[in-house]
Every structure is written in structure tokens, then in C-alpha cells.
Amino acid sequence: MSDLILVRHGQSEWNLENRFTGWVDVDLAPKGKLEACKAGELLKEKKFKIDYFFTSYQKRAIETLKLILNTLRIKDNEIVKAWQLNERHYGSLTGLNKDEMKKKLGEQKVHEFRRSWNISPDPLSKNNPYHPINIEAYKDVPSENIPDTESLKDTYERVFPYFEKEILNKLKQNKNILISAHGNSLRAICKYLFNLDENQITKLEIPTGNPLFINFNNKFEITQCNYLDKGRAKNLIIF
Figure 1 (cartoon, one colour):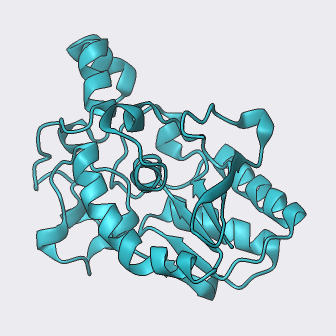
Figure 2 (cartoon, rainbow, N blue to C red):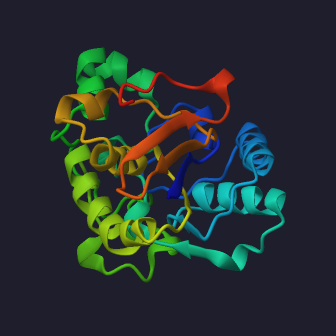
């Protein structure tokens, strides 16, 4: 048996400002730090034994994991960081306010950009300071792997190979794993785990800072799946 715990980072400064964030490396908002600490307390109460800790290259996810580990009294040098677990790149929408873009483009178009499977926004100019090539955190990511924009499908095709190679086998070896990442990178993982189709995955909502606990039996079948903070849980269309 093995456990997988998925945590979407706590509320970020741009979540608070309702801006498209993607690969921009923004900090946690004060509420996000509290959410991360609460996630740590929930995990501590359950007394989970966790063997591996994974996160993205983005500081909102890294800081969320560090706050969780601090609560669990675990040294943060155990963290494995992978750019493949980064949030989806929102292209030319990056940095823009979601409500303002709804007024400009229409609510349906913005929803299409945010939740469709294979539609991506226009590419972000490489001259834009929000482009990943201009962000220090990604200086060691091969340039050919840095996107200008992504659809949810593109994000899945980036996340899943890494998950399959570096994480899946550990779960099948009965290791317990915690991943602190992002709404869309976690959607990509859930698409595989719960065999979701392209329509179902667009409807999956993942709240910030609320650990999603998934237990597997020895046949790698899911036997349990629930959010630890029941007061902030989203409906799981998948289980």
C-alpha cells in the first residue's frame, strides 16, 4: 500500500489579485502561508509517514512545501524540485487581470482559455519580463523546454512523463509521496490517476492549500481519496 498527497500551493499574491500567473515566480500571500501551515497541521494529525517530497521550480509551491515540512519538523533538504511540475503557461494572458479580460474578450472566451483541453492563448513575447527566459528561477532549464504558451494538453504532456518516470514507480514500490505543485500540473496527474477524459479534467477544481489524500492498495488501485480539510473541500467528480 502507498499514499500520495497532492497539495496545490497556498494562495499566491497574484491569486489574490486575480491575475493569470503561470510561470511567473510570485510569492505566497499571507493567507497562502496560513493555508500551508494548516495543511502541515492536517498532515501532522494524520501521522502520515512520507518518503519523498516533490515540488516545482516556483517559489509559491516551494514555500508551501517548506512551511508544511517545518510544521512536520522535517528538514527541507529532502525536497526534489522539478520544472516539469510548474504551472501551465498562460501565454499572452500572463500578468493580466482575469475579470478585465472577461470584459475585453468575453466570459466564454476566457473560460475556454482557462479550462479547454487543447486551446492555448497567444504566445507571450520573449521580450516580456514575465516570459520564463527572463526569470532567474529557470536559468538552468533547457531553452527548448521553456514554453511561450500552453494548453492543458501541453501541460499534461510536460507533467506526465516526469510523473511516470520519477514518481509512479516509487508509489508502486509502496513509498509515500507528497507533491506540492499547481492547479494545472496537479490536474494533469489526476487525469492519469483517475482516468479522466478531456471533458472531465477541465471540470476538476483543486482548492489552494488543502491536501488531497489518495491511498493505493497492493494492486495499485485507489481505495481512498479525500481532502483533509473537509470544510474547504471541492466536490471530487473523480471518486
